[in-house]
Length: 88
Image (tube, rainbow, N blue to C red):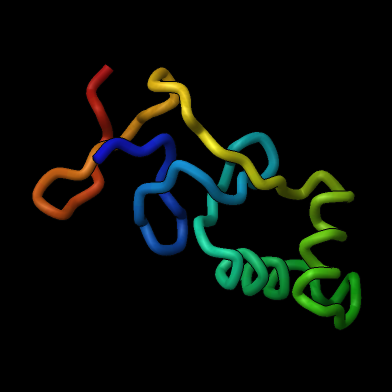
């Protein structure tokens, strides 16, 4: 299997998920994304529901949801259960 990105939390390959900033950090699962947002921003934005926190982060251009489908976007592949970078 080929993947466009690798989750910075789970280290799993991903072809859809949350892109932070201009690609400085990636999260595959919403629960991990919310946990990271709470760790970094909860004290400054106050307690919110998960959905409100995600909506706030998108509006503030902290992150966005995306899907990668173009073969040129694939940077990783799974080999023997490991996610390794594809040699370009």
